[in-house]
Length: 503
Image (cartoon, rainbow, N blue to C red; front, side, top):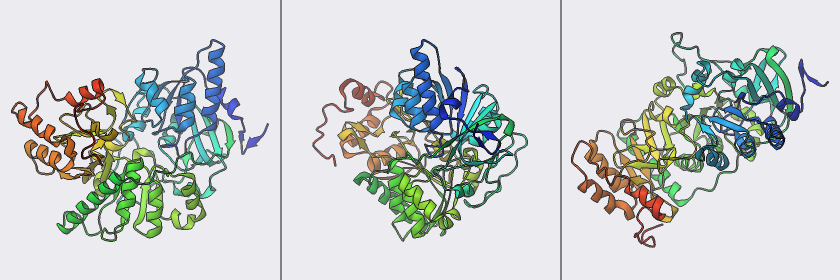
């Protein structure tokens, strides 16, 4: 039998045989980087074979965030997943969740490790973690993401390691891993700058629980981000102007503050836009994902350093990091998500949080997860961790979608993930609504006038004028009228002339 150090080398198919029906499996990585692929694909093949033979096979999947196409597409299509947490990003998985075929727990990412350790998700039978190397004494050097992998390695009864030779062995130098003790043994977290290191460069596992190594060579499956569209560029320009005004008013320090930006094309476009202005001071990031645009910003010196839980990079950008590791290695830190998203660190660093909304209402509540209040999109992810604890909590979105058939500014959010009490700024391509220091009536006016699309402003103003008086003016008979119209007629305002004013 082939061995990797002291550990037997298995095929992905052999590894999959060690995972029983009904098991909970902990998947390493975070938003597709660092996520094992070969064993999940083999699990999908095994599930199809067993189902064809009339035998049951499903597992519970506990991830860090997204778990990549092998889990959230291949395994889902094979009907091999019964439960999923805490976040997903694939349409196939989303459709299965919304159809009730997968039970989904939508979790704040900073809570995941502690709740796993407290047993709320049951025993963890198997951990599957991608690494660039594992030593005989159980030091696991992860690749491009950390997520909840270190917790999985400590909690799981059995461990499978995918050693991915595609990655530069030096990638492990980026890691800063520390598992925090539970209350009441917590101590202050000594991260006073995004690049401060407080842990070690490896995750630890008991070698006796490692049942095998699967060797692979798999590149990044992250697609290249789309080129920024006109609306994203306008949002970035509005944000830039807002930051410059805050600096001029001395509400932000001259050295600026660390930025967090959520995953996705809008977030990627915003970071690229902010980085193009020499009027904005060079800045750092304390975030959960580092996307393609940040590599250019590091090269240009606009971004001076970043802490993240994942290098959420397309293959070309990842190879750029590896080709010049001496440059990038000193400017990047990867942490477990319980540290990258820890409320205390976010608060003490004064992070500026920029996240994407599905919709916002006229008083500043934000929905980032559910379409029309019922259909899961991706999940709350880390938005709540940052939104509730940041120095500035900013949510961005285009003002309209589907050619104007949907307004992102509505009378009342169909689902509330982030309450008005902790949302400071809303930005669309129409403008900025700074909600700090305002009561409900002034908030509503500012959001409608500054952020709503002109096609919907009159409707929203009439809604407020006709609503029942109170601290918040709402008409409970009409507050979801736009959503009902969308479901019944395919447009929030069916009689609207969409040829006018949609750009």
